[in-house]
Image (cartoon, rainbow, N blue to C red; front, top):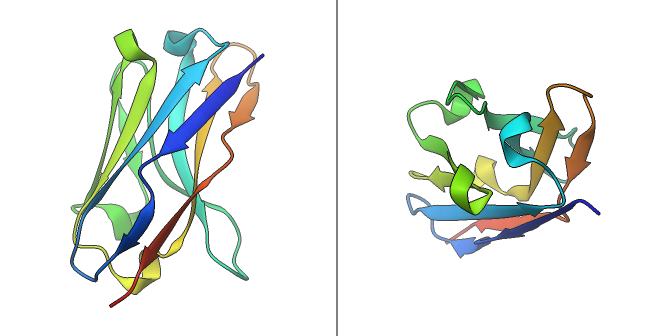
Length: 117
């Protein structure tokens, strides 16, 4: 079965950095657009960034210039490097895999990111 296992969340001070990782199994990684979404309390889940197998990226406006998404197909892993974090970045971050052929979407369990002094 499909499994997306996230890691790297935690508590960080404003202005700090974190790197999230998501390792996939049970899918053909190269067939999937990999993305990071987040959901803050009382808000809808939103796309933070995604990356195609070819390396094309897409970012939430507020993430541009601060966050970098990357993927390592050999390790079936997608990363989200987050810099200059602020309180608005506090949320549960979810990894997503979307198969470009079937449009099937799979989700990780989420990892909490809290930005606070």
